[in-house]
Image 1: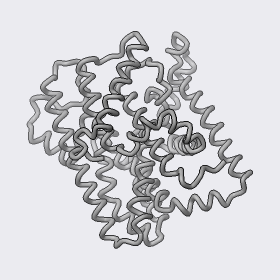
Image 2: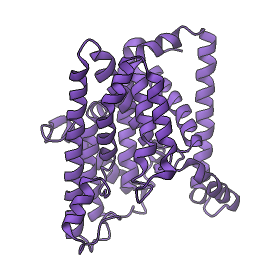
Image 3: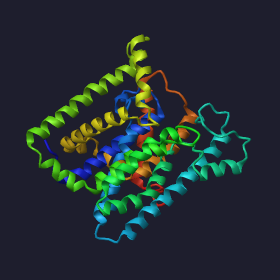
Image 4: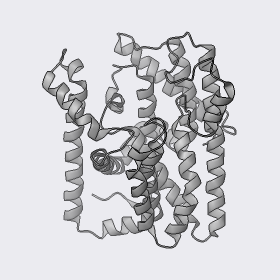
Length: 369
């Protein structure tokens, strides 16, 4: 039940492409659309964003960590810092662009909430963007990625010294400080919590071959039992989660006990804080998803590779373009229609528009990939 060695990186690309499509669909929020299951409408206790960040960390650990071990540390660190600066500049420019665009269409009901007041001092807005104390638009994860990349050289140095456990200990400590964050909102404070996923991925990527060898050295029976349990738990919890959050719509009315259960569970699965329960559930879901994509890789490539691979291999480019697409279409059509067919066509059109941009390399020399 172990995927072939040569398929692992392709599996990451497929998964990252899948997560990106889920993020696009969830941000569009044109539901129902017939493919609500793709990302669970963004309402599940684990989102596609966690998977996107973990894979980003894993791939970085492979291409900037393990594959550059024969290069001087300064060489790898320079690449990381250059990428961090590039994403920082991109994040600030996008924030300003969407703020100015939002101000221009301020009376449009489709303008994304959270924009600074039109009469606020422009220099205050710019300074807030430069210091990441103000984020706006649909590409706010670039802020987190830029910050994590800026710190990555220190983590990479520790990994080269064999001190992977120090990286995880420090990352875990920072994660525990979410509640003590001096930042104004939980969304801004995600820099404390979400770095745990990213740097865990960095450690995994750096030791990817060792982890794979360790796994394949386990008995076939143990591997089968582990995978079977992960897939079974994922199927049961994912279905249960979907029923809990979508019960009123699924059953045509309010089901009090399910709604009460949802209210009770929500604090334990808060997206911003990433409590232990959410992290544990994410770990199980990711393991199951990775195995399923690796096991059925040929089938997925044959039927969805045309979409997932271009998205997965140009992830930041796709993520940046989706910010423009979602912001723009919401100015025209803010809410979903009553027809799932129309909602599907709207959602699919945006995904395909981004796909065409990838295939034609539209502004690819300007937008980070």
